[in-house]
Length: 266
Image 1 (tube, rainbow, N blue to C red):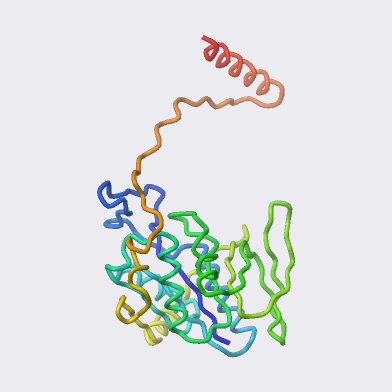
Image 2 (image 1 turned 180 degrees about the vertical axis):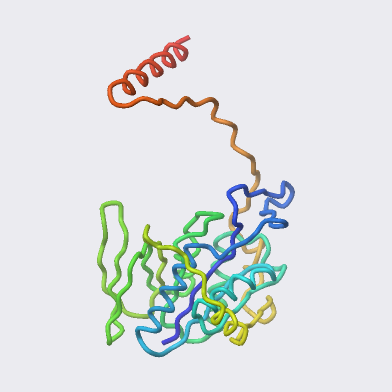
């Protein structure tokens, strides 16, 4: 069984800076990490492979050369092979162009049974790339997946998170899964022995030429959306903390609300 995990390297900070001219993230001087949602997806992908007892896990990312470190961590987590898609032609990609590029890489790998993605990336939070990859590949998809079980016949039982609880679904490959880590998930760091083994695993770098496909669908040219303006939201003003309990806290809150209502009416 051939499994693919699509991952992303993201800034390890909440203070993201944006280049005012290019409207892209400024990554210089900002530490980067493997997107936590993708970390969970990789761990589940490896677990499924080990449960089946055969097959391989290939991790893919699109990004600058430094994204190699995120892939190396995935290899240390148990993936068998890595592909870095890196070229200036991919710069400025929106979610559609990103999904097209990743889908093209997945096609290049040949017959795939399952694709694993994190539900979203912490730097963009769009949750669009996974479903768009499925659309590009013509593959069924399940999103907001928190738990996956697989039997000896490769039938999947999927726990999909909803606002009211869970939907429990049955499915078979080929399939794309967008995973949402449970609240109990703690991203682990692989031991040194696995880190050393990761350095010996296959690692491929594909530029636009090696990737193939329609080059007009890469980067800014292939993007349906572009960022026109970015700005820091204005301060929301003062806040007041009520250091009381029970009825006293409710009374104090009422006084504050009445005071603000009087100001608004002015």
